[in-house]
Image 1 (cartoon, rainbow, N blue to C red):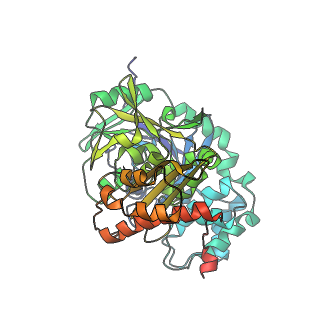
Image 2 (cartoon, rainbow, N blue to C red):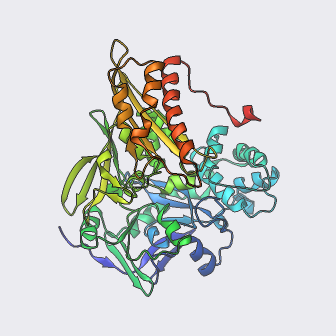
Image 3 (cartoon, one colour):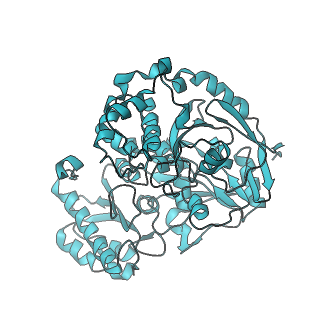
Length: 494
């Protein structure tokens, strides 16, 4: 394994300007740098935890195939050191033709989408990102794009009307970020010099590996370093808990960790694949997972957060481990040049403890696609539907015999124990039994053998215990009624 050359300056593009920085703290956020160092005040701080969207900017990144994608991200929890080789676009960079407002901005003005104005730049940037990818979005696409943007003034309806009208103010062909796509790709490619970035300051050290092998060597040599992929969790360690995270290894730019492949009925997802990047493949093969993904944070969080990071953090309320466990997923763990593969359910040992050796990291997760005779479902219970942390999450994968008895069943929960955990006693009570309401109700009494949930701000232990049982009953009713899952839209609810 050859040693990569080392560079000591961070390089990226801000709007149209090349940026070179030699003094960057490992915990310096993009938001603070924009506002304090560049005096770009359009990007606001509302929550400092990736929840309100007032800090939304676009970040352009080269894809493994050589393209360029722009995505909305939360600047308040995005670290400056993670932007090596990226293009950052703030609201100040937007412009229309003939010195007019950009179509997104003009639509917001004409449809009265802004009142106090504090949240408006974040809405504009989220809508800009959506408009570039989908010039004529559906109402559902607009709502998904704006899940991570909160407004106290307008009631959202004027903003939705503005979003529907953007293309009437001009097409995407003349938009600068699209018209200049080829030249920006060339500029970003010129920044990729194959070097490792290392910056050490009085506030600590940050490292950006040259490639995956370089990261493996660094992780082995620095087993206590903080690994940051999307920073949707680590960002809050800094902004809310004031934790020191140095030394930090940023891996968001490692394209070798961004592969998604389907082979022999298994989806293999690199640990650096974001939720947004995984959606296309999941929608083709496991659509039930897409509905869950669309409820993980807002679009900005899904553009940053990774499935591998959600697993590696080991949180008992992480959204992806329970459904992946129910599907029988496995993990590839890597230490240096050595790899091993384990069942995902065995990775979680106890609260805050995983089966991971010093210097070892999650490289990929392998997810079996349900067969035609298997039924898979996942349910997330929260206080609000969108952009909320799980109280209870249940996942089920059922296979029935020709005579209607349970030939196989995997049930996993989050929020019910110190780790994501299978309901082994409940599974045992159902296996070999007829799939009917009486058998399900008997199995529901076995939950106390599997889980002893805690009470916290999200739910009481009693609520969690009852919800867990009722989710099994819901799964049974949905698998036997033949009806589609009913979802009440916000229009029907009103």
